[in-house]
Image (tube, rainbow, N blue to C red; front, top):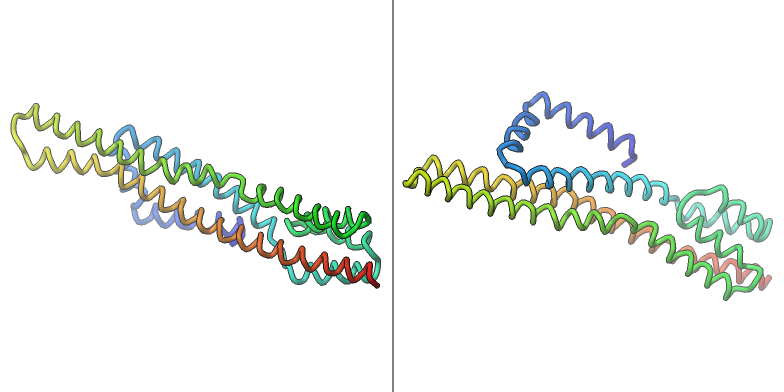
Length: 228
């Protein structure tokens, strides 16, 4: 899904929620949840910000690997390393960057090219994974804040019972309902961010797998070129 499509979907979802009154309902429940709702909301907003940044980064890092490898091999066979480097320079994506690093060292031998590919591949992998630790942190913190808010709410509910000197169903039900709202919002926040996190991990694993497979093909192509 492209970034523009994602924003369009989010705008449509918000418009539909406004028409059905969902936002008003969520706002009312949010206000009932107390002070712990704000840190949970902060986790959701910051987590989604990191998610959008990762979506943009991974969309730029992704490319048609098979088509790119064919172009690089054709350039190697027709114009040599210099021509292949031009293809990499004019292409965006992690694989193009890794290929460019390997081709820069091709004149020093296959071992030097392979080491450059491995070193730059590790750098690209770190670049792809950057920001995931923060999403993971918000996934962990949001439910913990929710549980803490629930404990505080239960304490306040029991304090209200003690002040009333009786166990009223209205007091108990109202207090527990408010207390559990923080847990609900914390879990929902964690679920939303967890879905994004798992998607990013799967996407990065695929990119790394394509990077390793295509790097082997590049080394083989360089070997055939030097052999020929």
